[in-house]
Image (cartoon, rainbow, N blue to C red; front, side, top):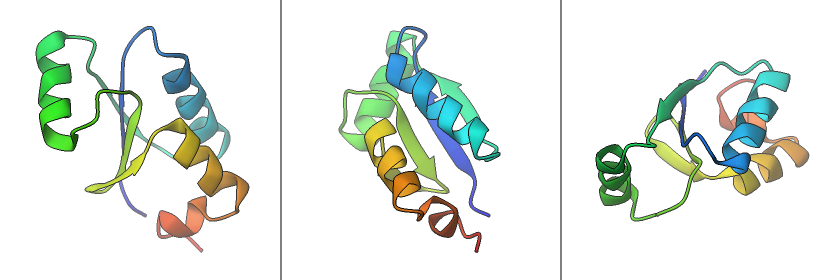
Length: 84
């Protein structure tokens, strides 16, 4: 199974929804809080996006909550993670 990392901030409702979806599906994840300006700028430099959450499966950016939710709704989330 691929490693899941989710970059979040304290005040982000989409971050909470993404974490909730992952928990409901029993998918372990590492949360990286980028509430600090310097950490956030490092993430923006890496991806070019100024939004959170940013969700990675291993080193692949899959997007944010909407993309995660679409994968789940289509029944493709576990497959994308390398589970069958």
